[in-house]
Image (tube, rainbow, N blue to C red; front, top):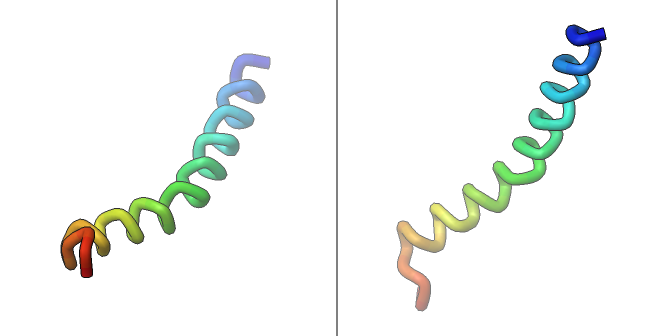
Length: 37
């Protein structure tokens, strides 16, 4: 039961990460080029 819960947790964390990564890349890119570029 504990293992199943942790795997579910890991799955949702990975899903959040995969959703957040493109945003992070955009933020990093805009920061790298400057906000007014």
